[in-house]
Image (cartoon, rainbow, N blue to C red; front, side, top):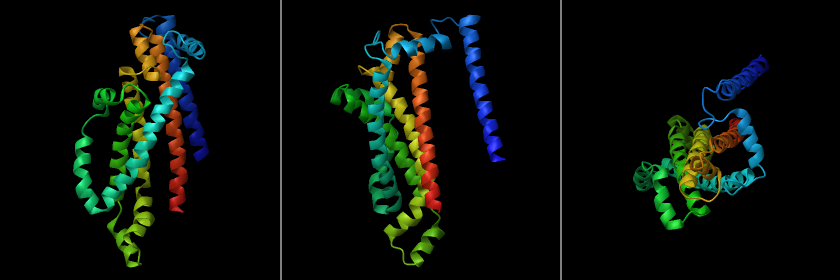
Length: 260
């Protein structure tokens, strides 16, 4: 029954995508309701993807080079944000002294949008990989801390009492009870961080960069090349979907393993 429902859902999703691109093609290339200078047709977008795959003009890099540049920065910033943010959120939630000392600073920093850090990062670090990765780090770090903190705090008190009654130390209770409970929250934080990372990366590349998908989109705007802009948006969407699917699969494996 579940397999039939899943197949039905997949068929509906495919039909929806086909309908979307068909309507897009009709509005832009057949009936020309929307000028091509504002929104290129799907056919034009595919032609641009094929062209940009091996041609550097007009923005100085091929599409694979832009993708690699963006993945390098987003991967570095996201991984650092997750590696630092998740443990920090756990520590703040589990140990009261850490919560009292670190949370006020974190509450202040998290109210500042990551994009607001772009000018100061450019001044301090230039427009290289480190500056952009720092901006991505901030955008990934904050959701990781918040969701990890919330997940640990969501641990039921009765479960903690039971663990302590059977002789579990505070640290053992953390790893055996609190963290397994918090895993769904942690993975939600990672997914939110992933989306925030791409948004911050594109903004950083548009304001100060010489390569990357955000830079390609910015050059498309400056050159009035709507097809370049749409190609950049589509590629970002595809990469984001693939990475989100990877996190979903990893969550199912890890959470099931903890439940067992």
